[in-house]
Length: 374
Image 1 (tube, rainbow, N blue to C red):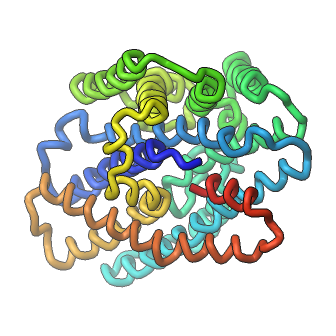
Image 2 (image 1 turned 180 degrees about the vertical axis):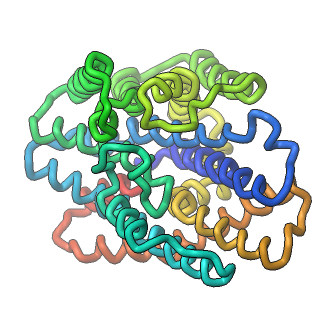
């Protein structure tokens, strides 16, 4: 079953992230009104929406998986869905960066730096002890590292045959985070697996449990949830939120981020999902443009940095030719279009081809796997 509210939220989340990075690019060449407000880094909250949604969608499609065979099947499907496109997008950015260095007569990364970035990109998760040495080609790869940490924890529940995955996951996450506070990590790898950002995924899993076990929730409560999340967002924009966007590998920053960004994001996710189930705001969830952006959200997320890298060449060659505030939205529009193009030309054909290599799958399993890939 496809949830249009999830696709709508994916569209919102990727637009926020892309908007955030658009301001970062604009600030290098001009001065905008937005860069002097709390809007400057607010778009990073889109990542928290993604984390909460992952906590919901993974058990939504794989909660009944049990045993070693299905556990490794789960990991294989996640690898195909996440990593292959990520590697292609990383290679594309690497090519653009090399071209940009040549076009602008600037030094490219050293061989050692390229090799280090290549290793971090391939492995996704950090394997070195300091944050400074974890530098995937696509810097947003840090978010995928936490996605994979959550996948691996869910994999452990599958292979262990856990009957109540929510309770088991909550126990495991709380144990890891408590371990991090009792024995503060000096090593990035240890800090990574004990990071409080995992609580955002857990919130999504709680939403899934409610979705599965609570059949009716009053619409007034759902509207209150959605309103609470939106109001919290507005207050963050108005009054600021500290440096919770600065480094989610820092334990204290991640905990602060969970409370300030994760909780309101979970209210919005829960409100939207349950309102759709109650047949409320249907026209909003079914908006064709937002559905398209939601379907293409992963591609947009991966290639918008490459779009901006190309724009910097344009600015240096031709000059910064638009008002700064207008430039932010111009860049955003171009990046979204580029991501949709990548989705149609690369992501969709590749995933369809990979599915066609498995004709022995039953129609029911094919539908399940296609849902997991959304």
